[in-house]
Amino acid sequence: MADNDGNEDTKIKVVFAPGSFDAFNGTQEELDEIVKMITEMAESGDFESFGSELTEEEFDELPEDLKAKLLLTMQEELEDAQDKRVLN
Image 1 (tube, one colour):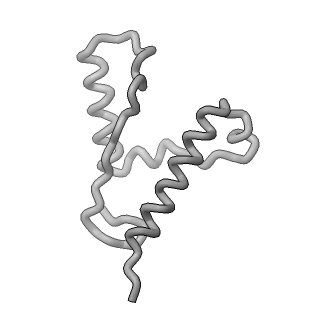
Image 2 (cartoon, one colour; image 1 turned 120 degrees about the vertical axis):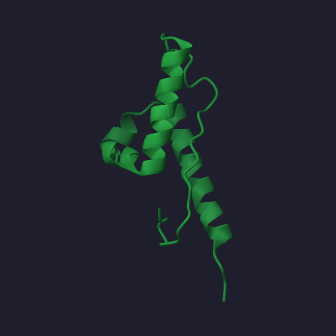
């Protein structure tokens, strides 16, 4: 798999936030299978085929706490990307 810069060996790490499955009503085996499926889809790249970019209107309709978390995550990713740049 290649990352956005074309570098090979970039592995996607799937991390579930605490409380992600608090509302899940299935068995532990069902939850384990869901987590396994999500992880496999992320690693294979299949996960991206299910996503779509949010429009400004859709973003505006999100709960304020979710918007704040998304913006913070985006900021952290930008900072990480800047830290990883190699200066010549």
